[in-house]
Image 1 (cartoon, rainbow, N blue to C red):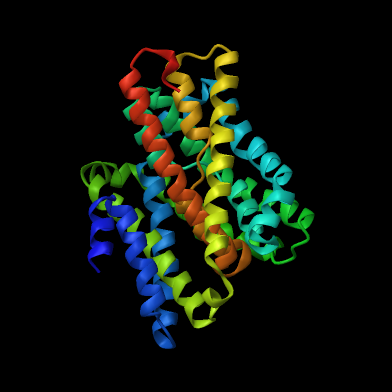
Image 2 (image 1 turned 60 degrees about the vertical axis):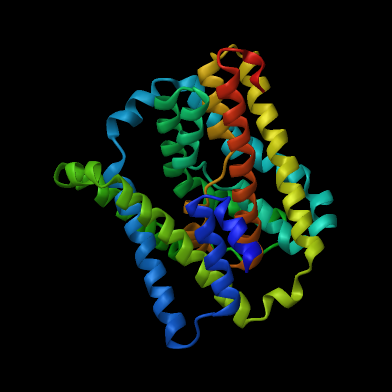
Length: 330
């Protein structure tokens, strides 16, 4: 217990919430009517998440950021093209390390859009182009609503998996749970903008609580189905190692290519943070929409990649901040 408290004292609130949700799902899984209630609550939280996301995202910031088309093209390339190609190339090694089922989770990670909040935060800490990061990460999330299901269909068919249902019903489900709430949030900006601007912390809590609910629900289901008895420690270590190696390759490719193309230091920072990160906030609800459930073989690699990218990017942001104007910061 003391060891757990020491870990919690050294990590941020969001990570602590994930750890606590995970432990609750392992030790006190919801069952029966409770499981149904948590499933309904999770779906409601996801809908609210994207509604508030639409309500707080400025349309002008998207328009302004899109004018910097070279930077947006770079982030798009690494997020939706380079990521999947690299993970496909690494599949023989990855399947040898963690097995085919868990590596399908890595392929799912490769299909996701970039994060929003953490990409912007790390870009700001490192002294990068924050307006461009806001636009790039936001547009990436919007494009992910359409591109992620298409990439999942392509990569999972290539990988020999048939679990992804990408028919009309899935498209309708994605639109009703993610896209329509976002559009409704955009429409409601004229009435909610002042409230949203004055309650940023409350909205931030909603973002985190949604992910905590998703994690608890998924781990409860895994506990009930005895999923953890099929998993060993070496698989977890293997996933973490794969996540770290692949993330570092992508970050190096982002930085070197953006430097070769003569982007400014500020733009290079935004490209690295927006082009090398994947969104747990979008990935978890998208998984429910595409697969009809929270598949633990897919969710576990996503959660581990999320934590690895936070740790690596935090160190990188601090290093860039300390380096200041020195381009040798990475």
